Image (cartoon, rainbow, N blue to C red):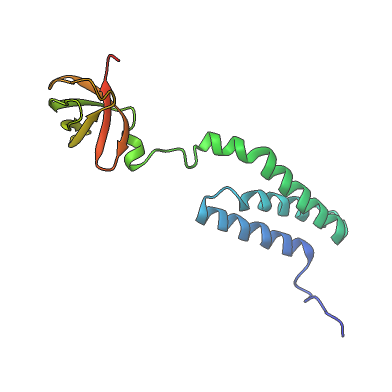
Length: 152
C-alpha cells in the first residue's frame, strides 16, 4: 500500500500554508508562541523552493523555530509588556489615598482611593493616622487596604 501526495500539494505549498495558519493562530491568541514556528515554516519554505530535501526542510523548521522561540521571546515579551499590566487589586498597590476618618490602632478607618471609599488599617498597628493625611496602600487584605503614612 503506497501513499500518493496530491499533485497540487508540493512542499512549498505545504510550508506556505503552515506559515499562514500559524500566523493566523498567533493573531487570534497573541500568546507569542506560534509566531516563532511560522518563522520556521518560512525558512523551510525557502529551503523547499531552493530544492532542499524533506529532511533538510524539517531540520531547518525545528532549528529555526526553537532558536526564535528561545532567543527572542523574552525580548518581545519585555518590549510588548505581555501580562505585565496590573489589573484589579494589584493596580491599587503603591497608590496614594486620602484618609477620610481616623485610622486608630487595631481599628479600621476610611480612605478615598481611586474615587472610591475603602476600609483601611494602618500597617503599623500602634500608630494613629488622622483624617486628612495622605497614605500609601501597601497591600489589600480582603476588603481592607493596609496603608502607611506617605512620609514614612
